[in-house]
Image 1 (tube, rainbow, N blue to C red):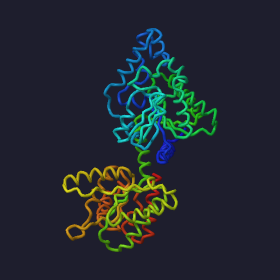
Image 2: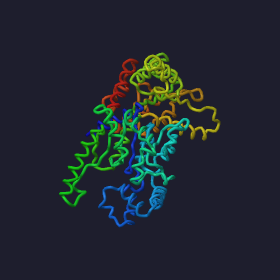
Image 3: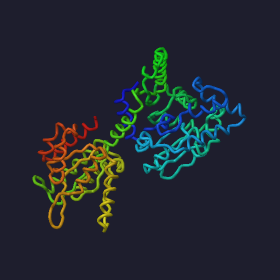
Image 4: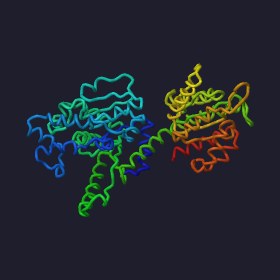
Length: 472
């Protein structure tokens, strides 16, 4: 088994490094209001006088129904009726489709994953049949492999024993594609029971090919608790059964992460998202005139050195190109990228200069507000420095930085206010210090953030804070 902390650490790394994948089973869709496999075939079992609660081989139920009725119309109608209903939003689906995961596999017929990807402004390439594997959508953000078909085409859905037995002839490339992904990516199996013969076949093939070198994957599984059982002997039996099942999954490189309740999954996924976002640092700063203790040269040196060090830590900088700060941030980042990061600019630097020449003040305020939110949402850490501007011939605090602080706080960012740089950052610091219990990661740094102005020491201080945040 894997601990929760190990899972969150390793899977968030897979997400950030671009080799994470998701395999979704019926359990993921159930909280939205869709039926699981057992409830899907319950009416079919009733039709042929079987008690679904006494049956374990649910695939056979659909086959028996087709055999008895001499057609599969009722089976197809059941799929269409159940998975075209209006259902509620699913927080877990929303999170996994917000994450920059490019590969989703599912045995579900519903459209939750692809619809959620679209809602998150991500273009999905849906693979429903074998022919679609050879055709790619231009500029796609993710591929969704629906290996058992789709609600919109129930006639070709995989549900009966016949369908499973003919799978290798009708959809062999799905197995090949899945095998490749299982070898090269780290999967999170969520809402999955591991009773699907197609998946088991692919896993066994990989184990035969790679043995102990199989890639490590993760599966979330609820602990067996005695309160769920009226019969103590049945509880004891299920405990033994689950233990054996967990050990068996290890043969395929799948580590089980035990949870006390399914409600824990959402917080775990949010933690993974937060860990991933913490790999990106938003730098908020503007400086029309040096503040006390600073010169134009020292400001440039500090912004340059800090951004260079951040990129050197394999982190990504998000910047709105603030006046008096932006050029130095970019130069420092580019220096490190060009010399040590194989010139992969987009992986380590995201520039989001604000749209200009908007004459309508209300329109500009609304547009800039949305723009700030989108920009800051790409990062998990927000660093604030300086923050002044020229207005009507006078130097005043930058109110835009205050807005960025409020946005970062609302998004749950880790916030680092370098108060020694003055301006709006000093006000942000004062507000945070007044509620310092909300920012435990700064517990040992409040005084240093306020008093340190020497460039080298200040850069080292901020980097130390960022390093500690990565470990949370």
